[in-house]
Image 1: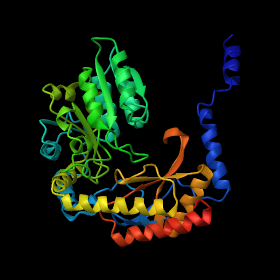
Image 2 (image 1 turned 30 degrees about the vertical axis):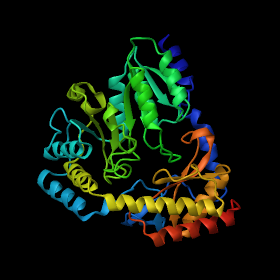
Image 3 (image 1 turned 45 degrees about the vertical axis):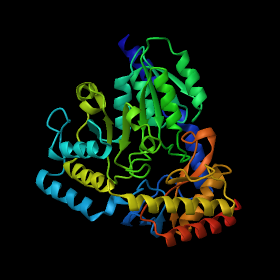
Image 4 (image 1 turned 90 degrees about the vertical axis):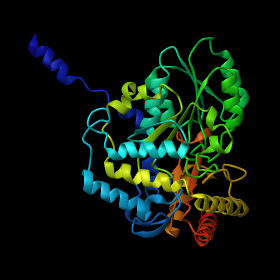
Length: 412
């Protein structure tokens, strides 16, 4: 009996749990077979500055990083990180609620409170974990999360982890948001999750109207300002500041991996019960704390961004110049006017997009190739992320690269 059962078990074929990804494998193999460089396996052998690197052996202008304010090579930021590593070592080897809170973790939270002029700040190991943790902790079973259909993956994953009822609405549609809110059962917990700047198209949310609708319908509001913090708003506090609704937003989520130039995520808020989140937010409680060197660099960067008005002005100038130049060349863009540091160049399809990406790389320009399902409406696009350290001459050089590559591939 035992022998027969053993034979039966050994003969069973396991279900290949990776087979569901076969279409993606096929698409990638088709692109590579056509001789296109792998757009999702770029190697930077050396980073020369916030705007230049050696990529696959080539001196390359970087137009595909989130280094919006160019803080990665700031001397003060680097010096602070070096000193903290010497003083505290390479890592924390523990969670924030155990041994993982060092001097610089508290300091970076103080810097965030100063930057946003808010009462509370909480730092996570990544921006993804900030959304995952805060959203899943705030809204659970029986609560409702109303969110933009084009929300970032970390927002969707936070909704799933919290087991709340999820109600999506059409992208940036105030009327659709209001209709969804009015259908929520009376007395239910309601959290509306929005983004200041949407990372694929670079478009800005109408937060002023949306926050008003949320408050009229008794919903709490969380805004992810990952792609606007440091750049948009008088003090760089994001779209909520720019549109005058920062005080009406309950929670702001952000990241250090964009304008701050390091790594990590955060949440700031004026909610009087905010500190309890440190005890009940699983991605905060059960994750090792960031190294003190990263925290010291981040705190220094945040405080310098408070006085970054000139950098912000130059970044806006770069955005207007590149957007206008690409439009004049005949490229189809994600927005009619420049709305952020992100400019999306729409491609006819994935094959043409990959060819254009490769042609630009050979010209000496790196951009992001984005494809479904990451992109809205199933489109393929090249995402350009400008930096405050790009010079006016570099922007003109970039336009020349786009013109030559676009004509060679037949897109313009």
